[in-house]
Length: 114
Image 1 (cartoon, rainbow, N blue to C red):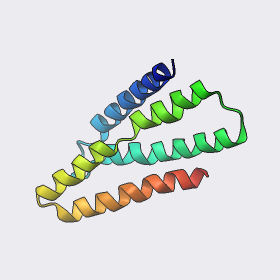
Image 2 (image 1 turned 90 degrees about the vertical axis):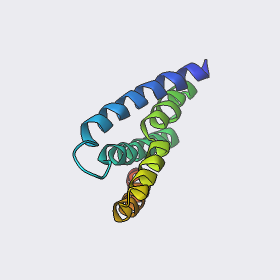
Image 3 (image 1 turned 90 degrees about the horizontal axis):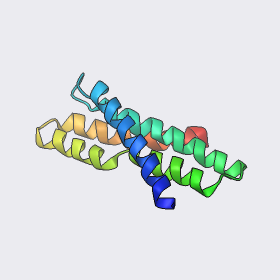
Image 4 (image 1 turned 180 degrees about the vertical axis):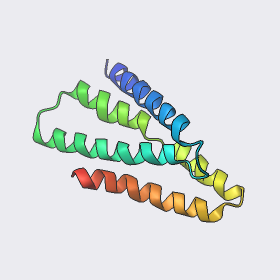
């Protein structure tokens, strides 16, 4: 049953990330949709961790929201590909900028909430 909660949350998170990417990635050379998903996913995960520390969150709800939704919503595999894609297309400054700001913003998103 636990896998079902992870699956449902992951599916919802992945669908939302895909929609955000379609809307934001077409406007510039930097893939801002993935950046936005990772940053807001970090904020959400930070909030969920804080909530989990302060209340008795049911296991199924944690699996659905933190493991499933946040896991499907944030995407370091896509992020890694996008950094590589920028780099091999000789957009090295953009690749380096995107690499540092994405990682930093995701960590910051968690820390802001905690």
